[in-house]
Image 1 (cartoon, rainbow, N blue to C red):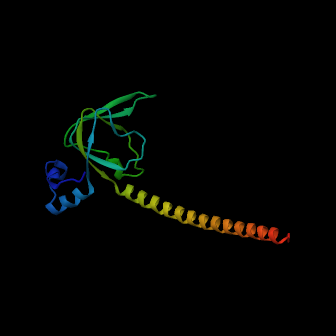
Image 2 (image 1 turned 60 degrees about the horizontal axis):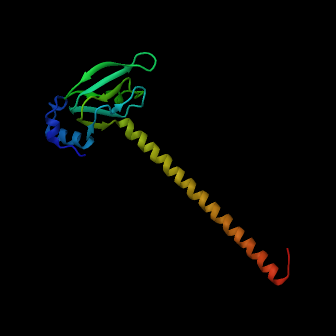
Image 3 (image 1 turned 60 degrees about the vertical axis):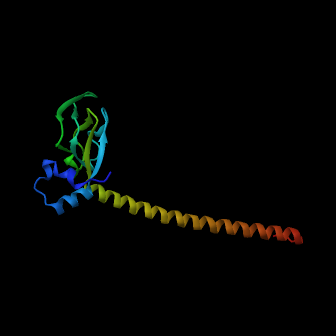
Length: 161
């Protein structure tokens, strides 16, 4: 969902921004809904997104030995999380999960945009390779059909190769 500039004005993170700066930030953000028990991100996953809680209760957890999770902190409205998406190696050091239904702003980091551009480049290269493979296959089929035609013609005329 596209973000309205007025939504940003109510958040302390954006207090000192001009109207034009707020418009630029709004274009980079998406409004999302989180539900109780839903994870925003998980510990040790690649960090691509920064979140600002507009109206949500969240818990931040970390692995406390084995598979058990311990609550590190509780976050409410007007809190920022996932800022690790800006810092190499871009890996979340905790898990963030919704306690209540709520609304957040999400913005993908520049790292994610670069990763997506690289994936698109690899996909394009793969498509070129597939087109080449298809051309080779088409040529092989054509050659096979030509051989079959020669055999059929030879059989009809009584000549054998």
